[in-house]
Length: 336
Ligand code: TYM
Image 1 (cartoon, rainbow, N blue to C red):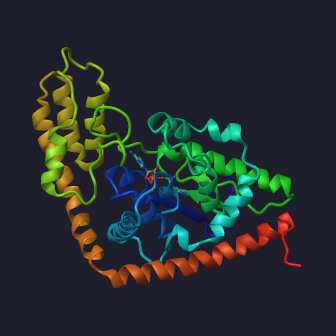
Image 2 (image 1 turned 90 degrees about the vertical axis):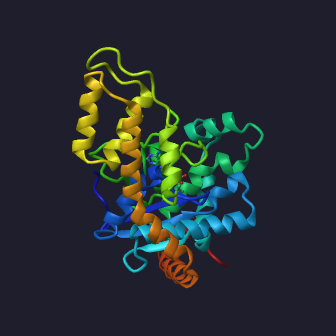
Image 3 (image 1 turned 135 degrees about the vertical axis):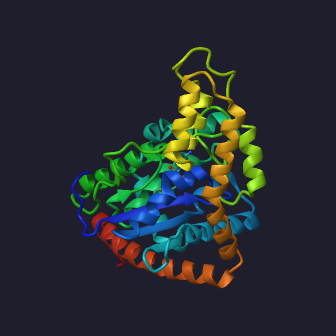
């Protein structure tokens, strides 16, 4: 990891408020958040502004924000140990977003893989917010002058853009205000949790996800329907993508012995995917059961949610204001 400028390092990360969190969010991001709050100065937020690109209804937006806050608390994030806040409560981010947009170029924004994907999937909703999604994300990160940004592999390019925008600002205004934010554990590969549909990553909009709040019955049903293949025809045959995905999921929720058992059966051409899925489903149910109970508790505790969000907003605003005043000074924005 590159040299950081803060002791302890400053950590920033967020999750969009578009429905419940899934296993990919948990294993790719949240689990690291929980560990990091013990050692670093952490800012974890709910990216409600980012979710506006898909135009949720006001009711749906508010419900999603509440659900995700409940899920943050349920996995063990503590409002005392870290700043747990809602993105729109820190309006300073939006001002920084505007400044960064002045030096974010159409070509680089259009080349962004997630933008190209969204254009392909929803050609009728190519709005400016979608194009400048990476600048808003960079503003989230830079507003706290983050050193580390724990994200899953799918956010790697966005993080690189945040580095580019921060460095560009530093160069342009001859300052060292922004550190170059690094992915968490840059010495280890970033995690990509696959979906149940045989290809790609688990995602909210892909319809292939196991949610932290799914009931045991829902989990069993989804896992039993997961895509596999017709089975290996010779020993030690390389696995097809759908089957590799099942093994990858198993590696995260089952014991090493269970994983080795099914690897063995696969390599000897004796595997029955039905049995493997049954085991995977039970291990997932057990893995998620304690979380589900806690999510339910926080979802019904409005007061705790409000207190957490208010405390988080106050902490995040303080840090954001300090950065923004230095940004304004660098740019030459001053009240006369
Ligand atoms: P979002 O909401 O899509 O995902 C939140 C986090 O979950 C991780 N993740 C995954 N990791 C592994 N496997 C998967 N299948 C998987 N699916 C999701 C994501 O990598 C991410 O860490 N743009 C961000 C939100 C954001 C943000 C930020 C993040 C806004 N501003 C500033 C960090 C810093 C997003 O859409 O994540």
